[in-house]
Image (cartoon, rainbow, N blue to C red):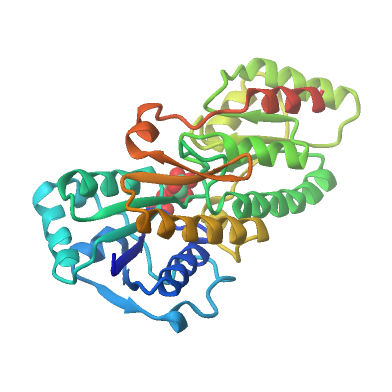
Length: 322
Ligand code: F6P
């Protein structure tokens, strides 16, 4: 293999730059030319592909977002559109592609590997949602978690001054990990997640009992994949009369300088993706399990389309918030 390409796709996540840097530097270290595909699959179709040298990734490890830009590209599901992109790789002699993104991005890579045997593909999990099979953690999850913690710590100050209940809506798509980990970290009274049935009446009773016991404020963490903060507030007010406010953290969760954890994870996974390409491997998603690097065939990643949920951790959050 002499030439590879790398792209970032889907919702950006802090640490994507560190992953691109690791891909570029590992490849160049191994005498491979690297091409950056700008704007994800859209750039692949539009031939927005440029060679990257060592300097192109200098001063990027600490930056949030992705300097390769990202995009959502539903057209890539069409075979004729995909073929245009594949031709843009072939005409440069590119034989390996590293796709950094979430599961939608992995599907594009899987299609390429199925349709052309001359191009190997490896997926690197980059999303704040932590919703990808085959890895304990995705790149960006830890930074987003820390952003939520910092925000809620601030909200807690005003919640306490005004003796209010705050409902915090966090991202995560269909996965409750951000809400679960953040809820545990900030000592939320209640966590509402897609993976666990929600009984609003029981939650209302808990809040009411807390107030009777002298609690001055409460934090309810809601995963967007279960319900919105506003819906939660409406439901809650059917059972109790509390002074509640909703705070939707939104895209702030996707920004910021990556945490140490995310920089290390991104560097390890980016380097490993190139090693797998050099080993002739294809159609795999890389990941980390019990702190060891692993790879899982795309087919298997999609077969059990659900990231493992930690019910023990959820149980613990309930025990700690009585
Ligand atoms: O997948 C990352 C994510 O931030 C999700 O948590 C969220 O549901 C979605 O992307 C938002 O997407 P967009 O930025 O396209 O509105």
